[in-house]
Length: 310
Image (cartoon, rainbow, N blue to C red):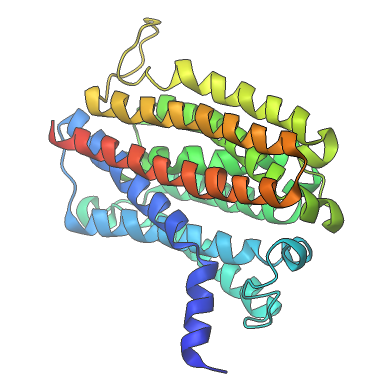
């Protein structure tokens, strides 16, 4: 087999945009926590905070393509496993190895600097591995619980970064993690609305398969609307409930852009669903949900990163 073709196939499986979101998001969470606490991170800590999420994300994505094979044969037949470029068994074991190795890396994040094992971060990472495996094999069979599993992983990204650097600060990034969790539940439902045909034929029981496309769109909208009042809290505690004021204006700008984008892409995707034209629906959801919202989430992370310097 052509080695270049094989390398490209592996790169596709790890989903570089998702890899970037996980690594960058974890580092941003750690750095903002350090600034807020008046602490600093060593180069070793920052490298480990990048490596552990990289292994976790890469392993989960590779492993995910194994149980997704039946759906991908219909929705995305050119992906590495359904096209035969990478063997199903190979992806299975590589994915498991990478996920479990991320737990080891999490354990040693602070060892060089403080001589201590980070059991809090290792346990959190092990929990995320469990959630990832649950989603890969059971999530799409249990409707909303599958979407929740993905959202837990995404919402945990900045929270994981904070725990990796400061294992005793378990509440510092929690409000942001909760806000991200709700928007991600909505986004995952939206993605599955786009994958409805393939998931239905594959026997998956996603929310759109259970409720239909239109009802699922309304459910997704509810989660998007919950995100709107939650995201400002880490920068503006308007409820006066004691949320740590970690962020400032850059965070609020990025969060507002994300909120507007979520609602706008929902509306544009909903218009596509109303056409009942499968090609238009597929194109709309690929454009708005898989690419559009993901791109703006990266922009959101960049705005959070800017908070470090102001």
